[in-house]
Image (cartoon, rainbow, N blue to C red; front, side, top):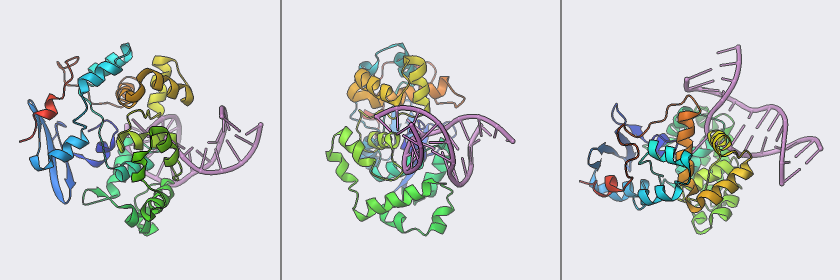
Length: 276
DNA sequence: CCCCAGGCACAGC
DNA sequence: GCTGTGCATGGG
């Protein structure tokens, strides 16, 4: 929930420890709480929560498949249990249009300001927002990207949902036709909004991590390396590396696996036995 | 006051 | 195709 994925921008802490998070969905507040035996949340939202947390992913199996070296082993142990999330296509696009050359705290503030009643403003409406209203959000030069992209998506000129039927490479090329969308934003949108797990978003932290730990520098080298090493699960590898890099290579504190649970077998138990 | 941030568009090679 | 630079603004 605080790993730089869309929930980091769209959900809020509902307790002091960070064991519970909330968001309004369809006008109603939903709270998801991590308890000793699993997650607790209103059963009526089971399908929503299961989709968000990709409950169908076998985390133990995935961890085994991407555990190719000592660095990944360390990341997998330290952030044991961290899942990729599946978010709305439009809200994910908006989130990462806001993200370029920014920081997580500010991205969150921007995205929250683009929400009404817990949901990101629809593209048709965002396209028509008076510039005076949009300007209040202080998006900087990203404001134009957002408005123009909203126009293209809202009018149907750009078929956002149609990207689902393209493979990763085709979808990435297509997404980059939107203003403000380059390789990195496209990868984030495809990974977190479309569930295309072969995407490997390359930001400054991943750049540092890949250079220091794997000796690969250029974006092209990084893409090839990631694709070759982690293939269809590159997105999972990237998420763990991103957290490890922020934890070990920078000042930002990343939330880790609770003490005593490092290296514990990763399972889906916490999600499967969760609803009440 | 400084440097940096989940990059991109564009100009110039 | 590759490389350098400006960008609006706030976080730390």
